Image 1 (cartoon, rainbow, N blue to C red):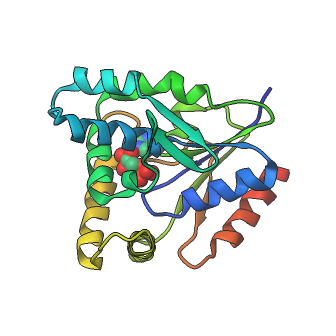
Image 2: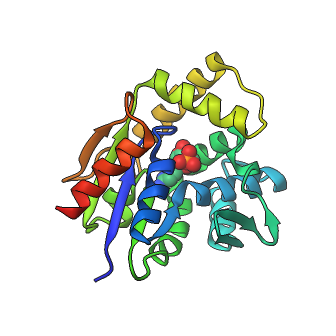
Image 3: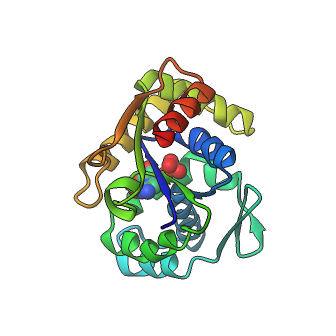
Length: 215
Ligand code: C5P
């Protein structure tokens, strides 16, 4: 019975950093499920696939030539680790993530990340849909302002340009789309531990998660 820790939450809540560090500490594998939606979005953008063409988008997701190695994300043989973090890619990802056929196409791929000795899965529906029997479920939140600041810093550090006002409105639009969609809406899973990281460092959040896991 391979353990899974599901860490869900809204965009820029810090879950990527926290989930990654928890995985490192436990020597577990790490699933960045958002990256799968972003990779599908990047392919759709490049091929100019209509965002209303659910069938075509699901086909892209189903045959996603994605690989993850040592923190790098590859699409076919191209390193797109930085590219998929662009706001435009994130926005398209959240639009196509509302399409049931796209979610279905990525389902089996995500289950495949569960390998010994364990998995830390990061996303929106890890605890609600993909790994409902996870040993530990965490729902990370942070205030909209704290998240906009984090996103700003992330983008600037990665060499993108950014503006706080635009980020705040993008963030709210993305939250609304993720929360009010009909399929796999963003919400805490049953039994999830809530963690508000607005005034916490990533390392403090990691300690909290590890403490819950140990109990
Ligand atoms: O977490 P990240 O910002 O990379 O995710 C990009 C988008 O992918 C999210 O806004 C969300 O709409 C979608 N997503 C999802 N389910 C997941 C992970 C991400 O719907 N498990």
